[in-house]
Amino acid sequence: MERSTAGWGSGLLGVIIFSGSLPATRLAVHDLSPLFLTSARAVIAALLGVALLAALRQTRPTRSDLVSLILVAAGVVVGFPLLTALALQHISAAHSIVFIGLLPLATAFFGVLRGGERPKPALWLFSIVGAATVAGFALSQSGAGSLTGDLLMVAAIVLCGLGYAEGATLSRRLGGWQVISWALLLSLPFMGAIMLFTLPVEWSAIGVPAWLGLAYVSLFSMLIGFVFWYRGLALGGIAGVSQLQLLQPFFGLTLAGLILHEPIAWTMIASTIVVVACVAGAKRFS
Image (tube, rainbow, N blue to C red; front, side, top):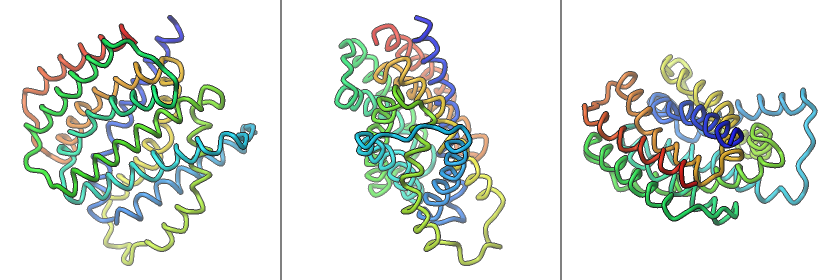
């Protein structure tokens, strides 16, 4: 029980940290190209992760871990950041949060497929109800979307769910921060090359909000958040703890309203109550 509680607590901290990712990305893509933003955040986080691995003398992953690390890198280092950055050129941060409501389902699905978990049927019911509540609320607040932006977000969610589940499974042996650090290191040559080829032409044209957005997604979204998130998934179970992501849109919408001044209505309160009940039910039947 203590292990499970610790996992849910750690997972909640990860969700709170990740909630700032889309608003921060929205700030950054005003002045930075999606390719530069995606590669720069990965390079910065990779350098920090490598420093930690070296300083703490962590054991290298085995050859059998390589495929899993590639999937983690493809999902959460490259795929999700790049696709969401591209999507946010077509849709608002509030609209993008509609799709974050689908992430718990995607993560739970890959947790069953890749992690070998077998959650109770009731968990899927709570997950579907929660996802529908999040999507319905966010759609009512976000305004018109874009087919291109929507398709990019769907692809981002699929890749992110795979990366979350694969990393959680691997972190049971390697540790949470170690998994994301090795995945970042694996992607460093590729992302470093992209960063060099997409450097901004006029650095003076980049505003302070864009730099702050880059700093947040590099340090918190790309590294620190995973320390808590992968630990939570590993301790509490992928299918169950992943349902905490149902709360992420409401944290994210609050930040979108405070930072980006995007509209948020009182209906968030009612929707949040439903989602909290769904998360509690998922925890009970995970």
